Length: 307
Image (tube, rainbow, N blue to C red; front, side):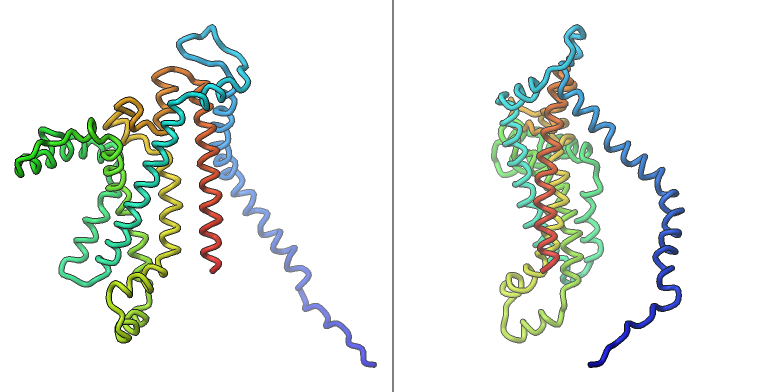
């Protein structure tokens, strides 16, 4: 019966982890101030918001203050405006995601083709993403959708039709159009990058086997874009939950509560009704909902990346 002895450790192998720890030590000390500032930047506002959500604090009534328990949360969830704003938030989120993903995918496939002026066309298609939300809302409100001075009103009159007062008759649709116009270039940018990474030999082989353009899109291009679409959905969802400037500039949450989302509801509670406690409770609920959505989106994308 033969016995084998373990090979002796290489010289310096035991000292390698210690050396690595010594090297990480100074780097950790140098990074510590930045990490502390970042944590303070995130945690301090969150702690203050949570603290105010349990306080009875109204700027119009300084004599009424103190610990309120769960009264602010109870008032929030029993208020019909909260549920209307939650539904409007989901409608806006789902509609913009559908429009931007579909339009971004189709435009990405289109701009991947070779045609004269493709570089200029790509630049013009991506440009709206760099327009500030307030500016975009003002442009659409005054230059595009205004029933008297807007471009769409002029087109309606050219065909002998009555111009549409978009923000009075179709307020939510108007906001969806504006936000979709802003975020479609972002989806195009991500998806175009993914389309360009597709193996052209694979598409050429499919074409030689008799697959048409539609078949190539559904069986080759679209499966290849699955991960990129997941990334677009995750990033857009995080930002679309906090849409505010477009609503504030165009409809101010109206008519009634037709376009009031969670972000605008919190603003109205804090700066229009001066109810800091109720607004803080709404902010905490919005943070919880955003983290729940982000948690499931991140898990979904992680599973897709593992495939």
